[in-house]
Length: 321
Image (cartoon, rainbow, N blue to C red; front, side, top):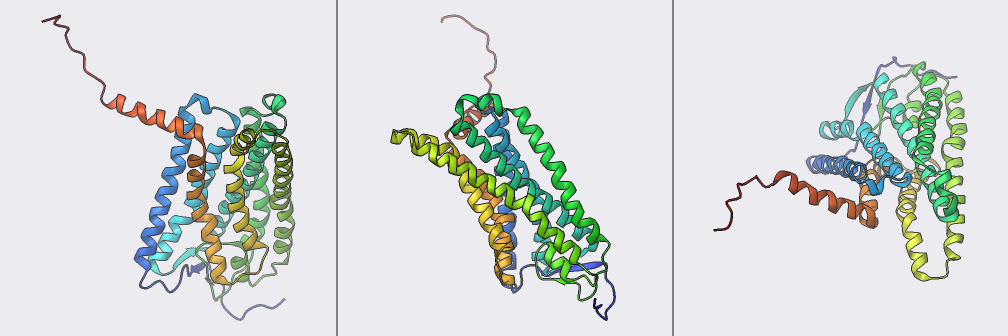
């Protein structure tokens, strides 16, 4: 094991998005706008589903959890990214960098598990409709999601705790806009082989197994849809899972392209922007535009708002004139 002939560091400098001297203000405002739209869009989904009794079902409960996860994920990344972009780079404490990686990874893995549960929900609803209510309910979803949070938190902790014991040397520069595992390990002057092996092993339960469940679920869903005789019936059935399928394609497509294929630093940053910034803002748009129930519930919610503000005042009935 070779040690670098440099001093140990407790701070890490994030380069962020370079060569933005002429576009820095524009990129900052664009990211700020996307962040605000993401928060408002996902909060709107949560409010609409919570306020409409017709949407109090496992499918829409899981959708609110997806919106909540998107809010957490983008909040962990974007505010600090805005500071990095505006300053042309920014220092962050080593423990703060590890904390950002931990919470980001937990939210990212939870979203993968959540998409898996949503695919299983659609499988039961389409392939086993007679047994759906006896298998899937709100309590089942709560138990699965709470168990997922606990398992994921412990698994990611198995990576972060050893990383916190490592020594980090100069140059203390990460050419990225947030703290990810590979750039962090590249700065370490300790033996990082154990964490690298652990990260490769954890890919199996955290990424590959959930992805396999999603693939198998949709294979059964597709075969079931093809058995429906009427074209209208096939279209109506497929519409109940088309939004989820689009979100899965966006999320897994960006993650697979980053972690399973070699990329340049520029491509890695672009793809990281896609699943940390773009995907969270697209999710509520995809679900709201393609879901008739959500649009109807939103119309009812909007129709109630003016009635509360413009409630007519009581007048004395003067009788006929």
